[in-house]
Length: 62
Image (tube, rainbow, N blue to C red; front, side, top):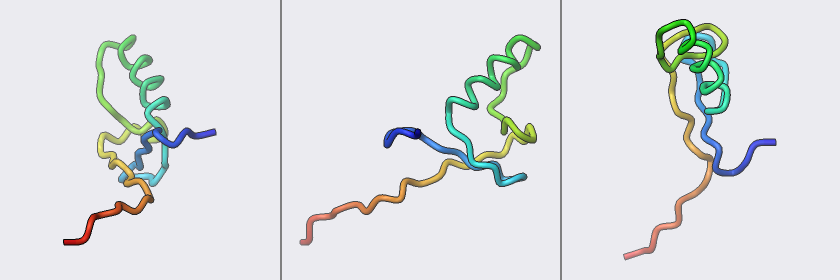
């Protein structure tokens, strides 16, 4: 179950949504191979976006 503070990312190429935990596991495997990039765990694309939280921000009126 996802916690409220967990950050999610979306791959620009394949559209998969994944968390930072999945990226860390993927980076550990890449480090063993000799290179490190933040990539999509599914397709390996380097272009990922951070998903905004679906919360409303309360702003004090002037």
